Image (cartoon, rainbow, N blue to C red; front, side, top):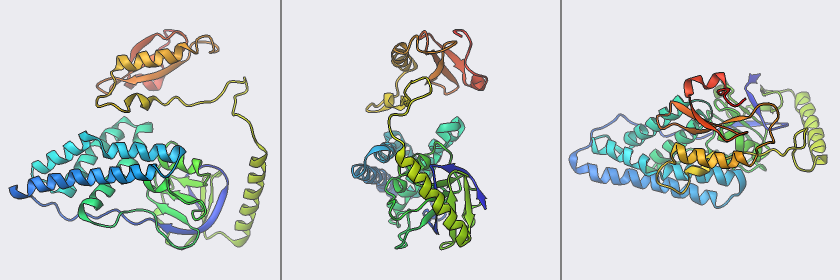
Length: 339
């Protein structure tokens, strides 16, 4: 029995099938001066082609899948990424290792940020592997095509693959890494697929081995008995029957609606990141509309990163007052000036 984080609802059983591996790099080589211009151009072309491919995939789907694919396409097309990889080539690094190095620097920044940002690491790893494969003319890593319903098993599923999963073929998902806010988890919920993420020992699962994924329990049972599979299928039938009777908008006990505030939209369609002041003004406008609707003390929300990534700007949702707050102190909660 493997234990991880259950995502979605329900359960499903079927044969495991591992994803195609990422490209394996040969030893680094130093470029001759005559090779540098062509290699730098090839690196930029590989990133453009990956971005184009993801944008085309995004155009074929809707909802969360389209949003995730579009975001990844924009990352691959980021000029800062292409410029950094090309700069490494100009220093004499071969294209494959230059791409790996450039993605590695961006990756390290997300890991250092932690939390939600760290869960975007899987996206960068996938973009790196796709770009290197494109550069070297290797097969693109991704989903298998076993010809029958199956349970994909991977270190972590790439958004580019997860977004195009066919629920008629894919029964459930199992990954070694990932968390509740990773793109794999978001898309699994959107596709209504039971998933077990963060299952540390999932790498030991061999192709064809039967697994029973229970999203509610956060478990992946290997080689389940026929009786266990039958009982799980009956629980799933009852769950779907109950879910079919549920309808209407989602609301909290006090009648308030439930929504999501997407702060990343301030970064779209622009060449430079918005300043802290611009973000604060935008969030203050939103919070001001909710004045008087908060119980007890004023609610607080993180509204912007500082330029050095070491401090936050907090905005009071009750009175729209804003002030800086050290990131290191965030775990102790927001300042109490307005409570």
